[in-house]
Image 1 (tube, rainbow, N blue to C red):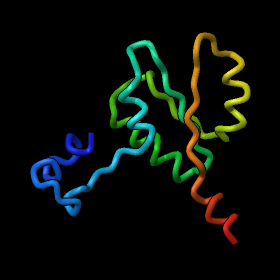
Image 2 (cartoon, helix red, strand yellow):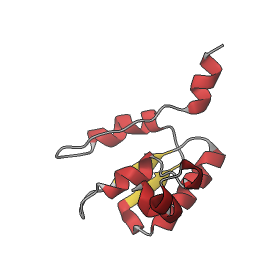
Image 3 (cartoon, one colour):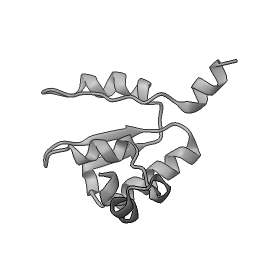
Image 4 (tube, helix red, strand yellow):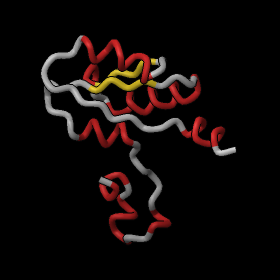
Length: 102
């Protein structure tokens, strides 16, 4: 995946040529089947705009949706409505970790 996004890195193997690193939403989208859907939540306004813009560039239409809300709160109601075998992947908020370290 990294080599596909970074042709120069693919040719040389030199980490200095590693310009694009896909975040977890991009990686998760790669594993979706045709009927799967991915719902992403981001509360911070600036991070939401960045995430929504990155997802729009994927060109996957309605398969991936981005919402500006607290993911843990949304997850409570979102999962109650799901049928089948839903799963969740949560990444910690970097700001929260930084502020709790002291």
